[in-house]
Length: 235
Image (cartoon, rainbow, N blue to C red; front, top):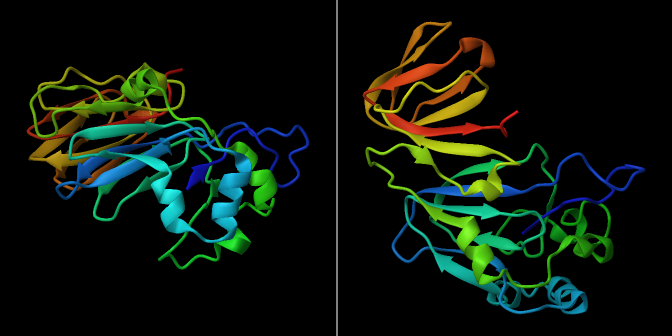
């Protein structure tokens, strides 16, 4: 799969969209040895990728990617244009920019007609121009792959600053200071606790609950639970 960024879609005369589809995965659960693919192993040419797509060579496409083992508590920031894949059995919390424009390079095992629907009605010759054909550098890999102590007692940001223009995510525990007012979504990962809001009622939360937080609710504090707060970029 590839995420689209900076191309004309459905008559956008300027040739650009307000947002690309930079995304990120927070790994909540994964079997031992599970992997994600991100970026090409080596410099690729558009013609070579086009040939793999046209021949439905899923194995060849996946073999061209760099795969990294992941486990619960890992997080992967995926810049728009970087090819990527997630192996089966991995449970993720996904954040993304406010678009849903995906290009499919392979679709084996999915109920999708990729030849018809995998290129946003632009044709693969145009759609493939969105790819980053060069591999990620070692420094880039260090920036986009992070870890946090899921289930631990320390709150903190999950992603490096590279993600800040697109979205934010924090792991919060009961000992965290008050979170400032602002739109967000809180996913409770552990505990039976409460969220106490400045301008609203106290809300009971348990493991697995997802809470949509309007700005009007004001700031809040957590008690007896922990989880992930996902938010838009800071104003």
